[in-house]
View 1 (spheres, rainbow, N blue to C red):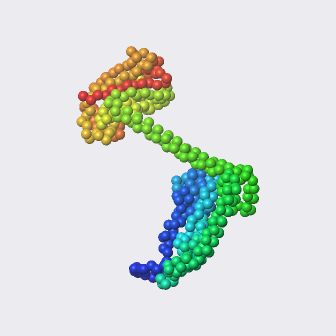
View 2: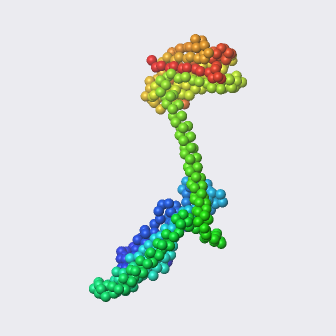
View 3: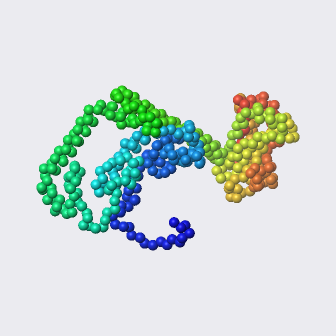
Length: 415
């Protein structure tokens, strides 16, 4: 075909007597469990991956050569260690039988889904019908049991049925005898052996075909072996699913914990308890470098109110003392608040062994200070508090530190 030639669309009429390909294709559509996700057709030489998906062997081989990961969930796969033959699914597909799409024309053959396309191409009944109504033949009503006569009219067939009753009875008796013999042969086979024979089928691709089972025991052993392989594959799939669910649950638990902490900070109504863990190591770091400081998480005076944090560090004026300050922080609702901030700020450094010795201090905000104006950065550079709040040695020795933790309670209330 000339690719450069201009093609014009026009209306077309389908010739009479031709079966549409859509009808044939729909009759051969597999169930989802037998469908390859790559070619969307029946699984041929099915294999299963460690992530639990089934593909045609040729489809997943060519796919992994180009991408190296599963087409379904993008998990990295290797043909050598992550792909296994799925003989169970292979047997299930081969046990399926489908009628020829030309059964209404007289084809009685039933084939496996994988052989259906080849059969359709060679079926003797896959012939276009002529539009001449005079050539249509009516088969005898006893066609299914062996009568091959055809007629041009219903009257001729009625006359045939009336005259050949004896031959038709013979056809029926022969068909009944064949059916009874088949049933008797099937009944003589032990049920367990019959099930094993159905489940077990030698691998046709393995070179030499194994010898078929001879006794009931050998058939059952082979069938049980196949079942064990399938169950191991399913168990591995379940382990992968459980591992993925565990990861999701862990991520959910972390997200939930963070959400609860954020809710506590937003709804503490300005009353925040700051617990400083691993205090000894943090103190040693601050004593070695006076520029190191500890900041608390940001907490709110109301859900949509002012946001503060607390700063603890070695006093730049007196290295033997702690400095304790509060800093305003930015929020998404700063434009709705009144500035500068006006309120009362209370500190309490908790004595965890003798609560009566807890150090409590209260101060009022000063509207003239930059520390209480609307923040222009994430955290206001200017803080408000005490440059020499407590002596370091007193805090360490007099019961303020317990289990290597220091607790500072802050209460900020708008006025």
